[in-house]
Amino acid sequence: MKGGVSQSFKLYLLHVFLLLLYLQDSSCSSVNSLKGSFNMDRKEDTLLPEISPTASPRPFLPLLAPSPWAPFTNSTLPKLSGLCTLKFDAVERMMGVTSIDCVAPFAQYLANVMCCPQLEATLVILIGQSSKFTNMLALNGTLAKHCLSDFQQILVSQGANDTLQHICSLHPSNLTEGSCPVKDVHEFETTVDSSSLLAACGKIDLVNECCEQTCQNAISEAAKKLALKAYDLLSTEAAEVLTDHSTMVNDCRSIVHRWLASKLDPNGAKDVLRGLSNCKNNKVCPLVFPNTSHVTKACGDGMKNQTTCCDTIEGYVSHLQRQSFVTNLQALDCAASFGLKLQKANVNKNIYKLCHVSLKDFSVQVAPEVSGCLLPSLPSDAVLDQSSGISFVCDLNDNIPAPWPSLSHLPVSSCNKTVKIPALPAAASGQISLNSLSIGSHLHLFALMALGSLFYT
Image 1 (cartoon, one colour):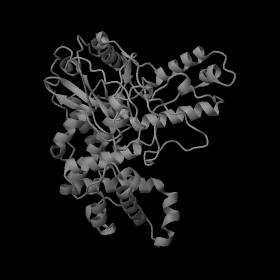
Image 2 (cartoon, helix red, strand yellow):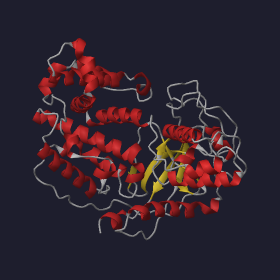
Image 3 (cartoon, rainbow, N blue to C red):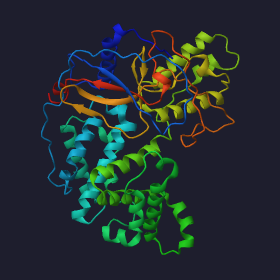
Image 4 (cartoon, one colour):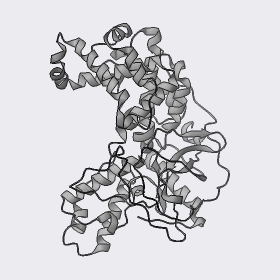
């Protein structure tokens, strides 16, 4: 909705962004200084539909800010129960990645795309790798409580948010077999076609899996076979029973994930699990849309004042921007969901075009005058550099117009390669813009924090 920023504001805007994020969720510590730097490069995101070409100015590259403080120089010793039998050393490096993806000030904002998918994948791999010694793909309820507590204690000791169970809706039951009748490794391998399953999921194509669903179909088939162990039924009766017991199939799907994690090395298992998670996440807008009555009143049929309408839209969207980072594909979903919601409430004009609403307006903003950060549609992690701080990659889509949905057409699908997203007109002088408007232009956002005082006081 707003496109440009003077170079002189670069450090001020970064201060505002990091300070607002920190102050909103933390009441225990203080930040004495926040410093940061931006670094842009470009990368093509192959999951997105083709984008219409357009000519536009070279991107504006902010200068480097002063030297940051070095984070993660200390760690605390976790208070463990001593009762968990899982092999934490098997995922030691992966837990380090998880603690960075879920770092305290950012966990809530990175939850749906980065933190929770990485957290869940790490737990699956932890249980899967441990099954090599226990021969079990699930924990009992008592052990699950101890292990989940120890798991979070270790992450928090490395700087992760201490409310991850709430943020990611994680419960001890997530470590059990649930309603799935199979948890023994030997029984699993005599029930399913394990060789075919491993062939389909040993390594997945992160770009094509979401559309072709080769691994996902193999996992579903295996989960159904496990679920049928609870019944003495012929295969012809399976479909009807499994429809009535989809919870059991979902629980068995978790067992299949853990078995795969036991057969792959941790990094390979992470690639598969994060890839499958992204297929699911990119299909849904994670934002919560509050009541739109004031928007429909200002922008509905018989709109009297365009300025009032656009001011109302801007206020509404600013609320969405405080919720979560989203991927570029999720931004398309969010634009479609919000647009359809307005149309059903009798807002028939293209409000996005009228009020210059962009895809980046549906994600967290660096600051009111700077483009929003859209995370890549492929799996990514935050990165820790001991000298510069924590960074994560953004697809910086500056002012790509949000497509106004049509009630007569389905929302844009990333699997439809013929769909084109409207291209951005050439930016005026002084605006931040991306060369060739590639959805893959990247912004490395350095979140430079005094983590010593944040986490270890």
